[in-house]
Image (cartoon, rainbow, N blue to C red; front, side):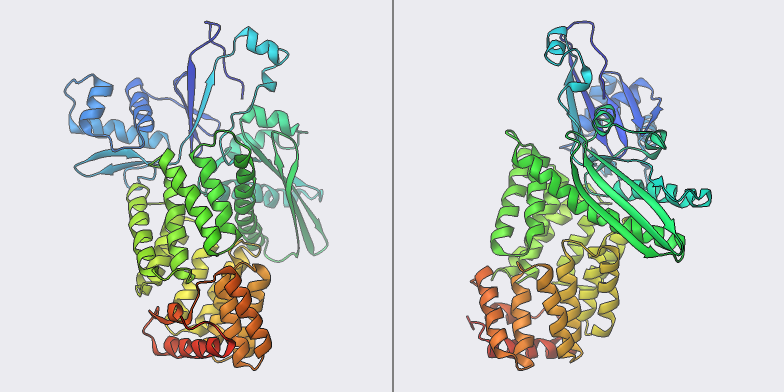
Length: 540
């Protein structure tokens, strides 16, 4: 994006704050939502800018009066009115408080993830370095910034145009739900419909790192959708996917395609951002967050979790109010407990609950945070409350496949293994290539085990490890199931594979605190422990 030049030659530092689909430019004193400029009264603009600049702390009423009104007397009603105007301008409300949160008797805090774009106006000397071309200036696009270009209709069927545009619009909406994503509004993206696009030039104009483009082609009773993710800075293709399905209900198909794309892109974008961060000489907090997430996606082993925790802790040290880092750290603690990767799992769950509760006090509508809290509650014998948290997360983001998988796990804890598979399969339907898919295979394996379908349990546990070999508890559970069906040699090999990933695992750790008091769950647990002993898992 080309910034206007200052008349001073060197210019002053201009800051643009990017959040949700909004841009607040403090130099131009402009607020935009997508491609639309939102007019603001001077005091409301100053109020919004002050809250954003001071987002790492709670701002009191007195702070606002001193900063915006120079200490003059201002009534509570007048302050509330201007806050509501600011909220409405950025698509928030006093009821939802997704961006500006009121903390009773304390003050106010801006809680959305913010990207800062610092750019100095360019003088002639710096322009000479780039041959006088502003388009060649180094990119300062925010993390996870992307534009979804209108998909091309290759069928030549005008009746299908609405379906093709619907995929583009829905995908734009769903990608905006990805934690920390900055997605160009559809009104801007659709101005490029049907036009040839230079991806690198487009990236500079819109100040985004990634471009998603695709096509839809219908032939007979089949529909083919091709999608590719492109690095806008280099023009390199990062990822491509093709959907080839029989035509059924077009709206159901649109939902399925969009949800699968959104979930897959989440992982692909995290991997791309982590690669960028590794080469950054001065990583910021979000660079560290993406590296932490990338380690989480590798698998549940003590080593991977230690790497992930280290990055999240470094991010919090740089930015104590970073919501993404807080959720990441809570997720690590919860995973350590739920995957039996530590002997002090009670302390890990307690630490996770403390961190995620604090996070939700700052960002109450952060869907993934509700999933983490749901995991903690489900694994600490508060299953009904955990299911409710996962359902709340799905109300906020319908694409959260992990929430469906956790509900399936919760049903298993309740002794309702017959209901588990439908929830895990829904997770797999929404995100079949998810980095967490291996855990949903495990959940189905647990359910089969609870229903005494041991041979089927072995099939699903093998699928779990085929999806991710770096899952120690998967190896130990497969070993138990194999031993019970008489495959002792393979069971012992599975134990050794598990111990290579987690040398500290023991039967004592696994059995010391049952996760449920349900008789059906406990009976299945006893059978698992017996199978582990037969397979040679250390007693501890």
